[in-house]
Figure 1 (cartoon, rainbow, N blue to C red):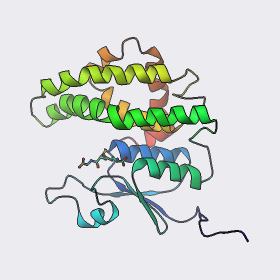
Figure 2: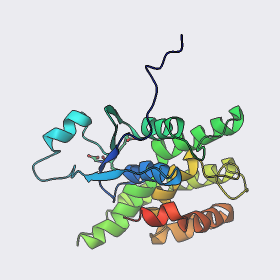
Figure 3: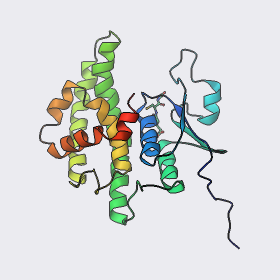
Figure 4: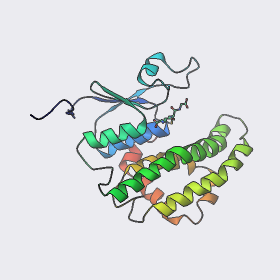
Length: 220
Ligand SMILES: N[C@@H](CCC(=O)N[C@@H](CS)C(=O)NCC(=O)O)C(=O)O
C-alpha cells in the first residue's frame, strides 16, 4: 500500500518569519519567488532591545532568522528551508539533477555560508556602509583583515562558476539564490570595486541577476 504520511499539500499556507534586510531571509524569499509560491513575511526583530522575542525562540531556539512554516510543518536553517521549498513545490527546479552540477551548487552554497557571509557582509559591508549610516567610525582593522579572505571567496566563485548565464548551468539555482543577497550588500562598498577587478564573469552574473523579478520583489 502507498504511504501518504509524508505527502505535501502545496495549498497550505506558507509563512516566513524574519526581516527583509536579512541576507538569509532573502535567500528563502528568492526560492519562494522563483517558484512562484504565495507566502507571507512575518516581521521578527532579533535585535530588539529586549532580546529575541520569546515566541520566535520557540520557532528558532538559536534566535536567528528565517524560520519557516508550511501548514503545521516547521523548519529553521535556510539550507533546509530552500531545499524543502524546492522538493515540496512544483515549478522550476533550483537544484540540478546531475550529480556533478548538484555537488558544485552545494559547494558554492557551503563557501557562501561558511566564508563569504561573514567576510563580505559583516566584515566589509556592515563595517564600511552600515557604520557610516549609524554615525560610527568603521573598524579599519576588521575591514583590512577581511580583504584577503574576500579575495579568496571571489576567486573561488569565479573558478567554480561556469559562464552560461548563472553561477552553475543555464538556470537559477541555490548557488545564485545564496550569492545574490550577499552581493547586493557587498557591491555597495568601495572595497568591492577593487576586489572585483579581474572577475568579469562574476560582474556580468551580478548585473544580470540583480535585475531579476525575484530580486526586485525582495529588495530590502
Ligand atoms: N545558519 C542560519 C544563519 C541565519 C542567520 O545568521 N541569520 C542572521 C540574519 S541574516 C541572523 O539571524 N542574525 C541575528 C544574530 O546574529 O543574532 C541559516 O542558515 O538560516
